[in-house]
Structures are given as C-alpha cells and as structure tokens.
Amino acid sequence: MTKKQFEAVAKILGKRLAEKQHAPIGEYEAVEVLALDFAKYFAEQNPRFDETRFLEAVYSVTPEMALNAKIKSPF
Image 1 (cartoon, rainbow, N blue to C red):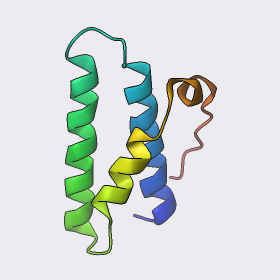
Image 2 (image 1 turned 180 degrees about the vertical axis):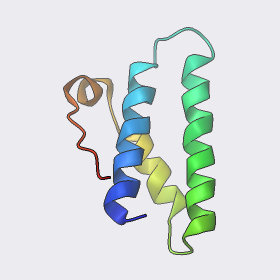
Image 3 (image 1 turned 180 degrees about the horizontal axis):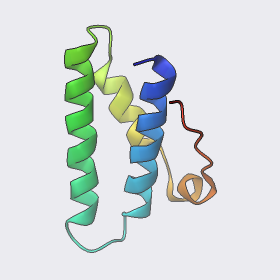
Image 4 (image 1 turned 60 degrees about the vertical axis):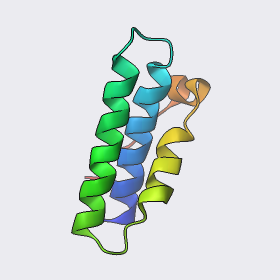
C-alpha cells in the first residue's frame, strides 16, 4: 500500500471514532479494535510503517472534522 492509502484508512477510522464518541457502549471500542488491528497488520506488511503515527492520525479526527469529511478513495 502507498502512504496515501494508509492515510486514507486512518482518516476513515478516525471519522468513525469521532462519530461513535457518544454511541452506545461497545461501538466506539469496536472501531478502536479495528484501528489497532489495521496498525498491526500494516506494520507486518511494511517494515517502514509507523504504527504510532498511524494511530495518532486516527485519533486526531474530531467530531467536527467527521461531519465535514470528504474522504476520497485512494484505490
């Protein structure tokens, strides 16, 4: 995968986390688990992949950003 694709996945997951901040118990955590699973998988596939940077990108999306998100598909 390319850097652009990794960034798009982080934005998508971050958008979902931001949307789920006030959701019923379990929904937010489910997206968190997906983010962690993706980070681990990407690191296994690409030795230069930075898990910390990816997760920081996921968690940097705010609810306001999620409402206004226009994420283009990198695929």
